[in-house]
Length: 401
Ligand code: ADP
Ligand code: MG
Image 1 (cartoon, rainbow, N blue to C red):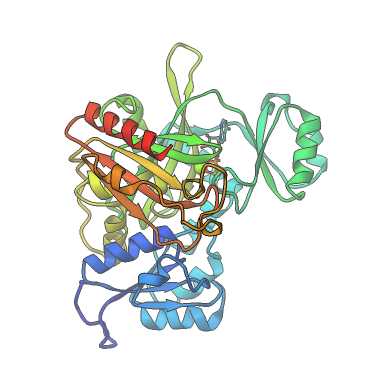
Image 2 (spheres, rainbow, N blue to C red):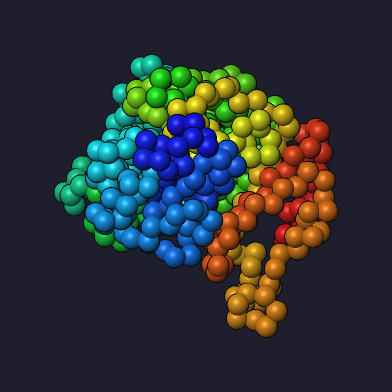
């Protein structure tokens, strides 16, 4: 699907995305930069991607008329969040190329299927998930192996940013947590001694060609990604190579097409070294990959566009050390904890001071209201050296409080 060409229906080539959040918005921006028309399906009239797309279909994700309209408008369709119903992607795939496929998204939607998939990949990848068990009935709580406690109980579906998971120290807490999560299907995972966390983006074309981005070192606060660092030494070289090889294996084994992100834990191997544990995957670009927008010769969103449109995928080259800071809605509240819109003067973070620092790149998602812990944007920091990036980051973080 060449940019600027006309489709067989005589329309400009149009790329569609299920979901209108910030990831959809940045996909739309990358697609439009290359000359494509775009269409977004998202019920929210103020969705960040819907606001800037050529077409915005405002229906539920499983609405037959909405899906038919998206298929009519688009030459190929992708997704920007994993909770798009797989049957909706299946329906679209009857008439249009859809990448990633409904089957791939379905695996990522369900922590149990996802872990089964990781276990199947382990003989090739050499990387295992944390010890875990599925919990579908109350009876299974009593049968949980002692070895899995202390652990983390996670709902099998619909969890994100640390939501839908509870840490448990013993069986009593496990039973209370399962009730608190509504008695839905869950995964109990052993609590691992994390040294650090990292993630890897891979882009895979329909021809099976894969290209990996450099490995991201991630710091989370309260279960939400806070900072991603990507530069030499952020992740030990040997671990980074293993994480990349594992991510390619995960994508190959699913016959995945598009951009995939796999998250890893770095843990103590008990022998004075480190080991890798595979945590979860996202069938789309990822928050930890935003640094690619300013630090690489191709962003994760351009890679998503290229994979979807069948354009060549070249190995990404990082041209600057980089650090990304997530900008959460908390910044839009004043020191007294007042909502920006409740006070007379809206609370606007000190962007002028932040942008006066060299190598700062602001990305805001155009969300109309700020909530605490809501992802409002991110700040990418680049520089000639790691020391310079770190220095700028500490000044920017001090300004942002
Ligand atoms: P989410 O879908 O919310 O991102 P994750 O499974 O990635 O869910 O968990 C969020 C964070 O919680 C992880 O990034 C990690 O910091 C911590 N965490 C999750 N599982 C474990 C575990 N088994 N051991 C230790 N920490 C964990
Ligand atoms: Mg995660």
